[in-house]
Image (cartoon, rainbow, N blue to C red; front, side, top):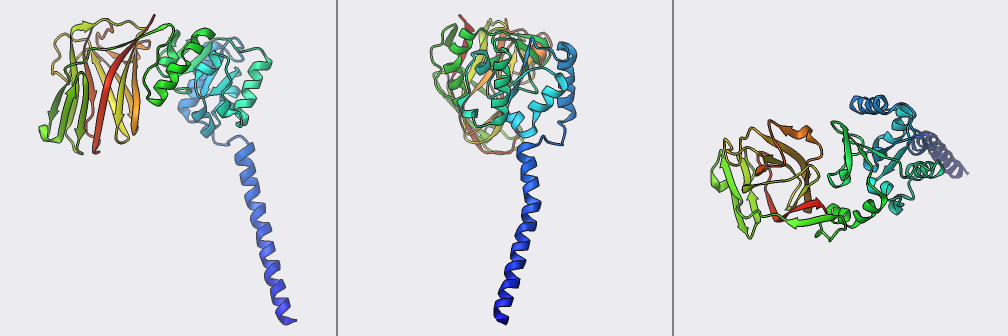
Length: 338
């Protein structure tokens, strides 16, 4: 009987401990799933939302704000955007879904996506111009086709539904690094990049090895502090417009920061290096195939007298990141509105 009493004491203690733990854990899990985050977005997000509100007016129902799902799901940014601007929002993986009035089936289990999309449907807001912010939605160059820049880093897209639908297969290929398919309304041609050259300092040519054939290249890098510039000089200069997009097809072995520079300076101070008239485009390479997209609709990256109508040099900056890597390109493509 004494033995039984000991067992019951242990069982009662265990049950009490479980009840206490449940009382502590349940509110935390409930708040994580169903309650808005008590932590406000960063000051940078706040300033961007206030900028949108000032430009378009609080409660404006004529335009819809696009908030990229990856950002919204981690910061509850969708709710803050709605509260601060009073404007309708679309939460998704690409603005092309909204512009084409297509459902993102991969997000149908997400309550924020379903709720905000239903709100747009109920109030007949699909088809309205879409506001794209560098900060809130990080639009790609392809997603900015037929968009109008309002102020640096802020655009309004009025892409027609038929145009958005036509871009779906092209967008999927670019996202997944696959060959670019023929696309109605877009001319896709391979650029003549036949003479890649390497400029290397602080260590000599033994720190990087370049091989190329028919405009394709493969460069192997060893970790170090040296400067590596892989560049191609165009003669005659490229004559592009603000609507054109350059797509560089790249493969990387590791995660790596990539900086691409375009120069319109006739006589670069240093081939593959210092120029006065240039535009910079930064991105993060990841393992596998991908596209580096370079567009000219936003001139906030232009320095000096850079002009896409006269591009003399393309420079890939690959240096000083202390990683061993191999980067391969099997083509550089030009996308032009047909």
